[in-house]
Length: 147
Image (cartoon, rainbow, N blue to C red; front, side, top):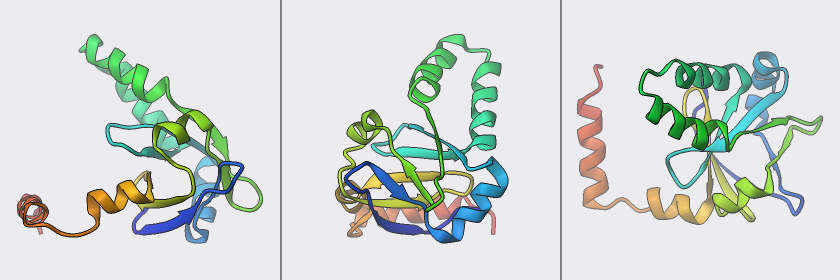
């Protein structure tokens, strides 16, 4: 399970170091292969290969072909397969870095079976300081969980 938020730096060559605590797990489950793609938010989504295959299978099985085509174009069509190198880094494709405004400081956020990668300024804008509206949305979301 991927959890937590990690401030990271993208180097001049566009490489991102995966936090050490996840490197072995990713290597064990995906043969060091990851898929990086656009998602519905202003960030990138990073999937181990087996989790990305599940997404692709779900899209392929959708009965609503118009919706499937839109997802296929956005998620599958934007995806890049990358490999974790010996130093635990991945090369972020420039087209995806540009899309997500990633040019230095970033935040990697665990999302159970995938990661989100945010430009630090966008992350802080969206999740930084709590406002009454953000607190109300969070309280409402927690009420839906069965605990």
